[in-house]
Amino acid sequence: MLTAYDYSMASIIDQAGMDVILVGDSASNVMAGNITTLPMTLDQMIYHGSSVVKAVKRALVVVDMPFGTCSGNPLLSLEAAIRIMKETGADTLKIEGGEEIIEDIKKIVAAGIPVMGHLGLMPQSINKYGTYTVRAKEKEEAEKLINDAGLLEKVGCYAVTLEKIPAKLAGEITAKLSIPTIGIGAGPYVDGQVLVMHDMLGINKGFSPKFLRRYEDLHTVISNAIKNYIKDVKSKNFPDENESY
Ligand code: KIV
View 1 (tube, rainbow, N blue to C red):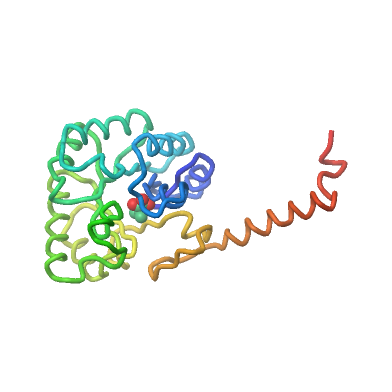
View 2: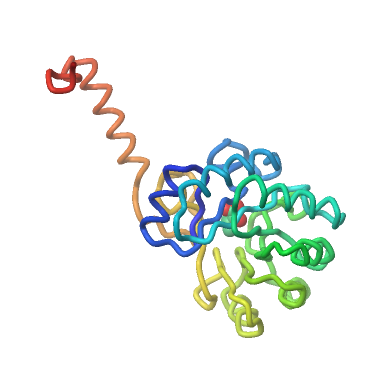
């Protein structure tokens, strides 16, 4: 699974053979320049989701429910979920949280909307944690996570994302569940992996957590292309005769 937020990149990612494209609320960070994912609105997620859906011919498209749209009022959560599904054409939703919002998830699943859970580090709860460090290193939090994962499976989630937790714990949860787990910073003992596109392509050079593998240095590639364009225009090399009418 890989994130995408716009038509052009989603098209490349889909054609490259990605199984699942996540319209993550990480758009808040990498597209909008916010420090957290909290400012992302339902309308903004719908804008990104519908742009991605138009490009995708084969991958499963998952859209994140943004902060505040699924927080303990099942009817309001269902209303937001239906808006995303209707207005984007996405296949499924991803929702951060466990036991505290289990009734919301139950209601959404009952309406025929497939839901991927999201446990471990939940960026929408950053103000509760106060830090983006590895979660569930202590027994109590690990036990809650295992319980939450079981609840998500029980209410009908078809998969669960596990973010930034110890690899051994992620392996234990994966072995316990019959639905697939998708890890980010959760080690190799999960069923699938997810990364943020800007991070893995090296567009976003300032973010270097241990779990990230960079597959390209697009920051340098794009920067060099732009410098060459500036140089060519200033030196009157561009446009030449073949590039003129
Ligand atoms: O918003 C996002 O991109 C995510 C991934 C980090 C899993 O939720």
